[in-house]
Amino acid sequence: MAQKKSSGNGLMSSAGLMRYYEADKKAIHVDPKTVVAVGVVIGLAILVLDANFGMWPVV
Image (tube, helix red, strand yellow):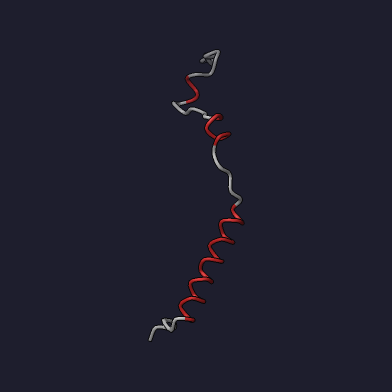
């Protein structure tokens, strides 16, 4: 019966993937709800401005 060989430190099992915890700590974190809310507000502002300046609805 074949026996399993243990590599010891697990470097071969990582398959080239590396972890960058330091880069994640320095990144700017924005809540997804904030991004959606800002998008909705900008979209509504565009609709209101188009309606005020007579450019909407386009026929």
